[in-house]
Length: 319
Ligand SMILES: Nc1ncnc2c1ncn2[C@@H]1O[C@H](COP(=O)(O)OP(=O)(O)OP(=O)(O)O)[C@@H](O)[C@H]1O
Ligand SMILES: O=P(O)(O)OC[C@H]1O[C@H](OP(=O)(O)OP(=O)(O)O)[C@H](O)[C@@H]1O
Image (cartoon, rainbow, N blue to C red; front, side):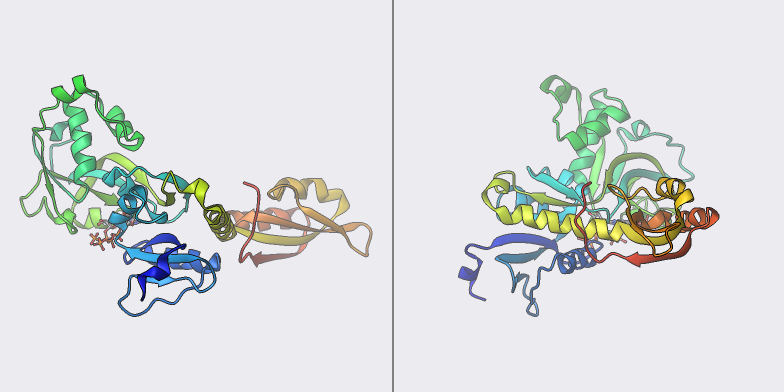
């Protein structure tokens, strides 16, 4: 590829592998960003928009966006906090949801993060954990120390001087959950989603430092300079909304319509159309996918008929 092809293109960073990769490809497809990625190339030019996709490790995307090497990107909030990147969060994407937790062996006498001050921690989130334990060592409680992380705030000079960094924090990249069993650590800090990895390793979580999900981020100086960023944002928002909602259609007698509208109020209001039989109407309304079974039961109970549920492929709705 000729890299002059990148001139005048919006550079959009996507995790090149791992937990977020497939979700990102689905979003790109839903937003109709077409591209062809040549074998072994980490840059792909969009064939229908002035965009170049840059496939990077999720851990590096915050820094690349913050420093303006790329314009926008998708990564986990945990990665943004770890890299301390100066980025604007445009959208929460609803996937890659997990918590960054302090974990200790089930058999350990350690009950709180404070009990680990002065002990050995193993993690892939070295900067987050250093900041958290510095905050604890300076006298903040666990809640205040965790709040400091996401706000990106630094310890005040006075507070910082009280932190002695006596807690040992060692970085490893993956398989962190084995560290306690191997005698390398008294506790670990790692991501938890289902909790399966933690339970298999005979660990339990004693506190949560961060909650995280995938986010669309932007370099703070770039948003106002390229209108394509707003367009992309709206498209991606539409794809996410479409994944959350389904369209529910049914017929109901006019006398039960008020009750039916309470069950399916829609985003703004349901669409109501008269049927040939004047005592009945047809209703069409967006409902949350994870509530649809309950909604169908309730509609049936008030006498609704011909209840049909349709998948939404894309949409633009007011939030
Ligand atoms: N179990 C999980 N459930 C949900 N989201 C997760 C989970 N593990 C990680 N994530 C999210 O996905 C992001 C990328 O994690 P992932 O483990 O896929 O990284 P990676 O870049 O592929 O690195 P590696 O494969 O070397 O661990 C994390 O920063 C986090 O936001
Ligand atoms: O609570 P769970 O659903 O079990 O998920 C948590 C695990 O997922 C992540 O690791 P991943 O599987 O991505 O592999 P890694 O350890 O190589 O990073 C994370 O580091 C945990 O180990």
